[in-house]
Each structure stands twice: as C-alpha cells, then as structure tokens.
Image (cartoon, rainbow, N blue to C red; front, side, top):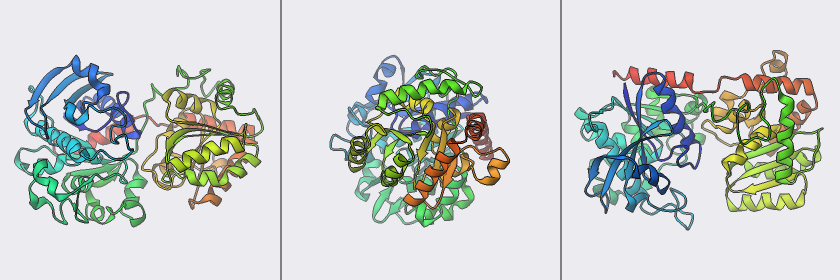
Length: 478
C-alpha cells in the first residue's frame, strides 16, 4: 500500500508543536508494517540543504506568483517530497507568523498552493509512484480533499486528521478563483463558514474519513464547548469520525539512552533520576528540597494550556515546599507573569522563556511531576514523555490526557494501576487540589516509586496506533 502524507511540519526538520512529532514518527511505524509512505512538506529554509541534494520530480511553472518544483529526498528515515517554492516558504522565523507575530497575510495562498500540488500528486503520481491513500493533517492540508473532489473519478480516498481544531485557516471568498476552486463549493454544506472560506471545514466536509488524536477528543469535538464552531458539521459526519491515540518515538524519548540527561536511568535504577533533578535545580536556580516534588512545565504559554490557572495557584504550590521549573513561550502576559514569579518566589520558581529541545528532555528526566492543566487537549505528548521518564503527569481530565493517564484515586492505588493525577472541573481550585494530592503522594516514597515504575511500563509507542491507521486505510477499499 502507498500513502501520501501531507503536513505543514515534521520533526526533526521543522517544529512548532506536537503535529511535527506525529508526522516524524507515524510514517516510520507504518513503514514497519509494509506501507510505502511519502511525506510531503513545504520547502522551508530549514530544508534548503535537503532540497539541494534532492531530485526534482515535478516542475510547476506558476504557483501563486512564482515557479516551484517538487523535490524527492530521503532523510532521517523518511521519504520526503518537498515543495520548493521560495516565494511562498523561504521566510525566516515562525513558519506561520510574520515579524509582527500575526499570520502571514498570504497563508491561504501558501498552504492552498501546497494542498493543490499535493492533490495533483495524489491524482497523477510521480515517477511511477501513485498513492492509494492521501492522509492530510490539520488546516494547512485540508483543501486537498476539496481539490480531489473537483475530479472525483481520478482521486484516491482521503483521510483527514485533526490535531487541533482551534486552528482552522480562514480567508475571503474572493480568493477562491486564485486558489483554483469552483465558487459552487462556497456554500453552507461546503467550505463556507460565516462568510469566510474555512480550510479545515473543507477537509471535514470532503474527506472520506476523519480522525483525531484521541478517542475522548473525538467525542468532545461534537460538543459546542470543544468544537470551536465545527461541532455541528462534525455531528453530521459522526459516522466517519474516530479517535486514534497518538504515541511517541521510543528511541528519541528513552531515559536509558537520552544524551540530554545528566544521568541515564531505567525503572530499575530510579535513584539515578536524582542527578537529573540536581541539574534542573542548578539550571533554574531552584533550592533543593527532598521532601516535596519538583514540578515542571514544558508548554506553549496560553490559556488553552491552563497556565493562567497555574499562576493563580503558585502561592499554594510554594507553600507546600514544592518547586516549579517552566520552559515555554507564548502569551506575553503569561510570560511576564512567570518571570515575575521567579522574582517573587526566588529559589522556588524558575523559568526559561523560549523553547529548547535539549532542555525539555532534561526537564522530563529531572522533574518529579509534570503539570498539564489544559482546558482542552486533543492528545498531548508531554504527558506521554512524562510517563516514559517516570515523571508523574498531573493533568486535567480532558481529551487525550484523560485517555492516557490513570488517576491515583483510592481504587486505582489499591489495584496498583495508577500512573498520574487527574483533576476536574478545570479551574484554579481543582488544580490546587491536584497539586496537594501530588505532594501527599510524593510524601509516600513506596507509593510514588510504584507509580513511577507503572508509568514507565505503559505502552505509549506507535505500534498499536499505526496498525489502527493501516486498518482504516484498508477499510477504504485499497
């Protein structure tokens, strides 16, 4: 079976969030099952060296104001197809945002053009390779099924995966002719959304199957409080919507071999974790306190992630003797709040504003617990990294967080199956109660170590999910 993946980012080449980790890992897991996967990505500056050494397999005379080409190259175990269109993608900084921190004004043309070429590859193939399935990811690739539906007799089936429904891709309907899409698609049962063209809605309407990244999130998306305006259309497509839980790359995230740790360890050598905690304490300027947990946060700083709630309960966290090490960036008011907290709670709160992949590994290896108080979370990966590293996840009961962490309630502790702490409803009082519970659990060394070992034994790789994707592809008749 041949599958074309189309996405806007992919680790380790370019990453702004969990989407990149998924695109970097799932094709490898599918390849192990005998699937021939090609991953199509925009040709960002980070891909310049790869494109230079690749083979041109398709030339495009004009794609929204300039020539382009499709470059094939194998790198990092992936068969890549890179859309080399410098006028669209050769831009420094964030791949979605301009210097002013706002979306590039031509994002609809950038990713509309990307989707258009992906659809052409799906229909025509390249150099003898013809996909049986197209797998589009998030709004940046969501016009692919719309392009395919304009010539349905030559189109392979299309699967859309929604990684985060909060990002949808909007533009004015006047852009449709330039995008090469017929105006008849601009209708309530098409890609029209409150007078705008909605890329993600196009994917939802025209894909043959829709998946998202956890079973609970799939159920939540049909509810107004989680659907971000798409709940109605998703209710009409409920029969083709399913949730397939994300996994992680067990080679990249492995405490026994991770080069970014101060000391490697396993479930049998948890005592070595202390060396990593000492390294985190030094890096973040935190005092040592063996009697209370060191919490960490590795996240975008947004209200979606519930980090305003964390600011509200910091006094209680510090009063319990716990410490916090935070790595992230995002909302400027939240950044300022945590920077202020490092001054107000010197030695108890440390923050690094920005993102550092190596430091994120050290935080997982050196912290006792990781805080993820998200108001909604399609799947989440940081809690999976926490499980893998014996860093107990404290999570809100939503989306994939609810699907992957077993709460340390009385019954779960009695049955020796608890792997973390959940809380609901999602407000400051609930978060503080969960922090207090975590501190109480940490004060019981045998209970805590048992949770760590169970967490580290959880099956959180891609094997099962990759098989589920393959079964889905087969159900489409290929």
